Amino acid sequence: MAELPETRSVPVVRADFSDDAVWERVKEKIIEPTEEGFGADVEFVEDRALTGLDEAGIASGYRRAYPHDYRHPVLFVVDTVAVAVPEQPVLVVNLNAGVDVGPFRALPRQVQSIQNNLSLANMDYLEFARSADADGVFRGF
Image 1 (cartoon, rainbow, N blue to C red):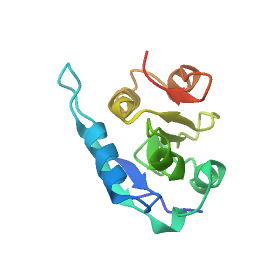
Image 2 (image 1 turned 90 degrees about the vertical axis):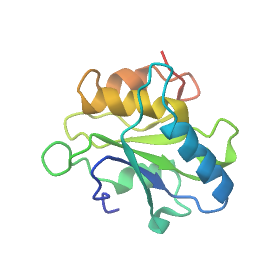
Image 3 (image 1 turned 180 degrees about the vertical axis):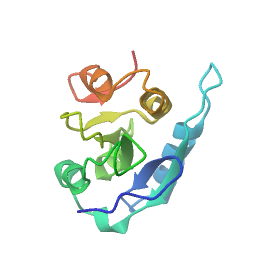
C-alpha cells in the first residue's frame, strides 16, 4: 500500500522518472491559470516506489481514506502513460471511501477543474469519470 502524501494541497504524484522535460511541461500545464483566472491548488510530489507500476497497480495502491483519514478526495499521478502519450493524460485516482468508482485520465489542463470542483463539493468524482471520452480521458465539458 502506497503512503498517501501529506500535503496541504491536492497531490500530483510523479511516478515516472524517465523524462524530466515532460514532467516540467505537465506541471506547467497544470498550474497555468484558466481563462477565468482559476488555478489548481495542488502540490507536486515524487514517489519512486510507484515506478514501473501500471495504472491498476497505482490505483489499488492507495486506500480510499477521504474524508475520515485523509484530507483530499483525489490525487493525480503522472505515470508512464502520461509521459509517453502526446496529450500527457494524468491518472486521476479516487480516494473517497463513499464513492466506488475507479480511476480515469484527464488532460493536465483539466486538473484545475477537477481539483477545484471536488474540493469545494460542487461536483463529485462520478460526474468527471462519466464525462471521460471513450478512451477514458477527461478533456472537459
